[in-house]
Length: 242
Image (cartoon, rainbow, N blue to C red; front, side):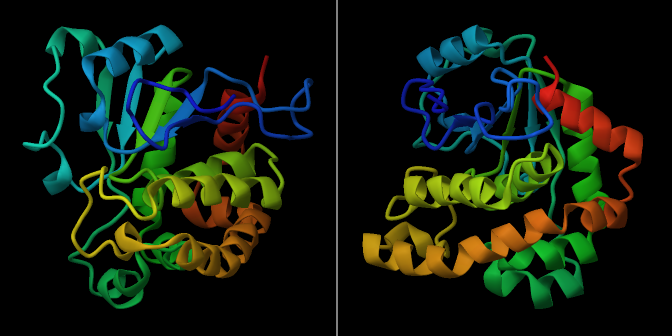
């Protein structure tokens, strides 16, 4: 039910339908935020379906050098995305010495999230504020829609009161969707592109407790990021308000 099925666009899910005590329905609201991989993978039909879903804004958390169409991407009628507001808010700085030391060795794992938050809080906060500014109908994406998107999604869901195990399960869905594939056009050093089911299971046994730990630390993390109580409430409302 949460898969948005925008034609062949992989690993894309609505953040609605997850349990939370902050919603009168007991679930996060559909039609507010979608997580996914690079938008250049959308076909014309995919864009049409995304617009029908209500897509009006995109928050792209990739580095600027990653943005743009590749030869293997579908050719698309540009008219289908006319009026969609796109903002680029990278969560990484691969020229930062501490980022290189602590994050680069584990970029394809939630093990780097806490380091990223500690080293570059301003970038993470800017991405969250961009989602807030976009409002309902926003797609948040990186390259695979797994790790950087997973970080922002984790913060949004944890702040909305989604329990740790549900957030971790959502992360696991993205890992399973992209493991053993290269259809997101990811970097050649993405080790998950060659993984078997067994390798994926082994990784998730280690990774899911890390996601859960990050969810439980949401109050401290939001404070460390400089997100105000009013901003936290507005971000929560984005996912839970009727």
